Length: 120
Image (spheres, rainbow, N blue to C red):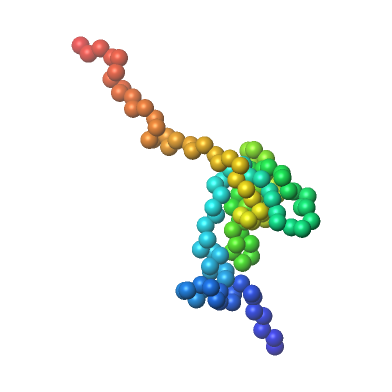
């Protein structure tokens, strides 16, 4: 009986800890923030039909070997049906990152419940 060996299960010769390619890839974090506006650009000899298209990062995904990938869509990122999946970090250029959303408990003003009431 033949035994299958998945390439991503092989040890990465460049990893000092001796982990598999998949383990190394799974330890990588996504670098592009969600809701960032990005432009698609590939380094292919033939122009890719999506080169120059600008979309928003809607979802973090991974390849079968654990490589971080991105799903892109229009502003709002509501429905996966309208997203385009499987873009690598190398094929994306950040155009604009999203404005940070303030934390509600840290930015909300403190209101004194007794303010404005007259004491008798």
